[in-house]
Length: 385
Ligand code: ADP
Image 1: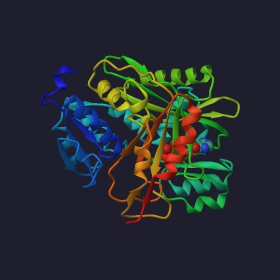
Image 2: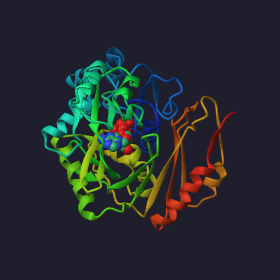
Image 3: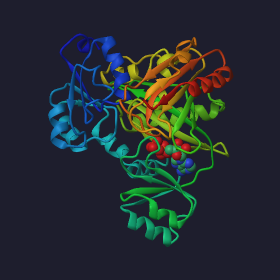
């Protein structure tokens, strides 16, 4: 990694949200030069990078021009212009994740088709090019209700996922290409983060558990260890390892799974970048997911992934009844709690369910910190100014 440290070699990051901001904590520690592209003039990453560029991540010319100024290019969001990434790769920029992998993952329909082709377990699904095709298929009994509708592209954090109970409910869905999945009887949701560097070295994080918000389809807590037996957690890690090797992926890959009521594992989806399910690695593990992503894309040796002790992370999201300006109330409670770490993403305005920050708590047993973090989360509140 020597040639990247305190040198003119530049890392470009497409996207300047909280994932970029936390990645930049590590580039600053290593003194790695960074450029960030984001469409938001007040993006979370703006003040941590060396050079901030305001621009559209989906625009070919903008992404191409940005990429030509850097030596290594990575992403913190999947919704970027793929054609520009292919062109940058042709012109010798190291683009990680590779465009061919990102292209499959960017679209839930092609992503799921990949799993089916590889005979990897994923919930049965149908793809539709538009809403009319979806409604026609619903009327013809192609799929059953209840089912899960997902926008094929541009969904995030549960925005773009909906449980559909009957044919009439299809009318309220937005236009666009989509998939419909069979409803899985979910007993647990788990995630495995795996890293692979360009030399082919692979490092797996332990399997973590995810607890979802009761109505928002959004993860609320991530915890380690899980209550699952070793057979299942190892099986999840094996699938994650096989995926990075099959794609010759470079960087992090977060693989989200469902475990159903019969203890069967299903791949839900993957993200080729740092992920919400890995935030607890910052305080919990020897190497954080952000440092590991950096090590992987710079082809440096990968770090150890062991947890020091049980850990739990709670997302801090915008409350239902508040949009716009806000202030934080209750920060002192977190700061007065030993082993609690507060991360604030620096977003200037809030909206319902918007991810604004997170709290991580570590301790000697998971049971003790589960109770405690719920209290901490309830004390920290976003309020109208
Ligand atoms: P996003 O890409 O926005 O994170 P996901 O595809 O991960 O959306 O879905 C969000 C959540 O919705 C899942 O974690 C799960 O709780 C629920 N969900 C998604 N697919 C299914 C399914 N097939 N059956 C039951 N619940 C599902």
